[in-house]
Image 1 (cartoon, rainbow, N blue to C red):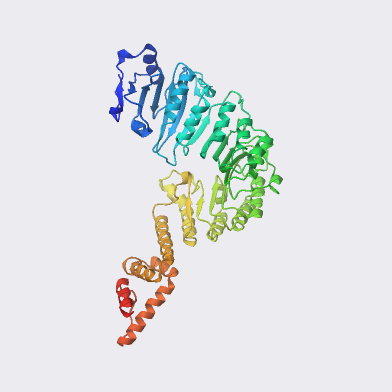
Image 2: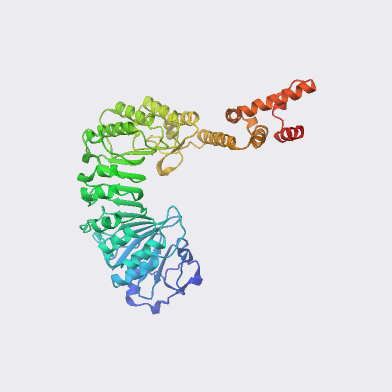
Length: 538
């Protein structure tokens, strides 16, 4: 029998093989192609951390209702058995899980218990209920009816970890379940996935919308997730009702249908993330498009679309006209620019310059900006001159074909890194990120610029201190750190010129009384000595 390393053994007990039913024995082989030991709890845990699921590479747990829970890092093999599949994100990595049982009711009971276990609140925390699994033919099959989950069970799941993202890819849910999800007293982070299923979606959103319209408190975050193959099955009228609701901190609409493609732009959410098929939008549609939010992230899905670049240019012109964006993301998915690259660069620069409140800018799959040195320099110049920008995401930068780490990569990427160095030196407020929000750096000179910029902002923060404390801190920085580095000294004094003048004036006054001329070492004398002398004179 396959041996497992189980942590927190006081919580478990191994079920001897002779106590297993034939069905349970077959299931172990069917899922993994080899026997996997089956455990049960000595006593039920109240917190997910007690199970230490991330410490176990794979474990099967038998419940008293004869259902079996699998938790592991690898997904079990295909099976036609009745089951519900889900993925848990906690901290380190996703855990692939399943619950097997003879009836949907029993599976729902176990799912309610397991999904309601408390766990630490982390940024990554998410529960993805993916109620499909490839059958022997490789097609998605569904072996569990999610509507069996009772309203009280769903309430318990939602309220147990309200900050956890709940990602439902379940095909459909009942009107009663929709009302529960729309009316919880806590804020939620909820995502409905429509786009990856083969069977028809029977829910039209009516019950959910009706309940949302009666809600008096903030909902939190809502995502409606379609796909290229299947748009969100919400009519234009219902999408307009959703857009009018002032309930969402974050609203994400991925692949609305053609008649609703423009509606989400007018939503009143704090942040809006949209992914739209470009053929559903004409360039002139952007001319007077109503965009309410100040924080918009737009992805245009653009395969096989004529005159594609005109859509981008028209959107950028509208951004320029509105001029009130604080966070802006633009991604061109599957784009093939046909013409007008120069015009697109001009439109982007105008959008940057005419949105003075812009703090965050994301440019995804817009590598055409970097095909010519002049384009790159002009865009970076606009970024360097923007006083409000703090963070930029360039997705794939540097845009080179060579393998990272190779000599050819280093050669091709050098011009891009040099341009980035100039940008960061001109605008010390910026952080430039790439894919996965990772800092773009060459590991050497760019890291040094970031360190210098961090020092610059730290020294600028001293202005908020009292004059006495500022004098002490600036003096200490000059004598013990920055004085040996010209750039650091210059940045420090650019923020505290008045302190330098005071230091020099003090030394001239003291030297006049002593009949000598002050030297550079006198001016940079230890700050503690200067402060002590000033107090004695008082």
